[in-house]
Amino acid sequence: MKLRKITKPRLYIFKSNKHIYANLIDDEKRKVITSSSTLSEGIKNKVTCFRNCSTAAIVGKNIGIKINKLGIKEIVFDRGKNLYHGQIKALADATREEGICF
Image (cartoon, rainbow, N blue to C red; front, side, top):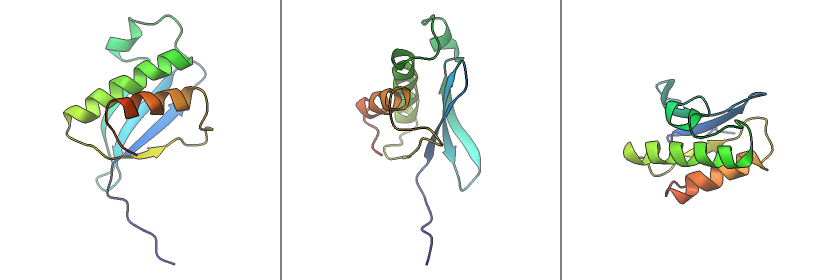
């Protein structure tokens, strides 16, 4: 069985006890292309509660805008060990609204 080589960047989502992070990773170069989180300057000042669905949607919109500025239209969504529900779903939907396909 052959494994396919993924050429699209990977959007990896990580949730800690207090914050949510979204990193766009180029697996070929092993580099983080761009990232967004509840600790980012533009988001940290807007919200009071750092880990809920509305904040996850703000992070998703922010990372979607950054990905669009880089000219990337298709990515691979990596939710890690998290279920596709709640905050993860809100982040993914907000990223899709910015025109990113996965």
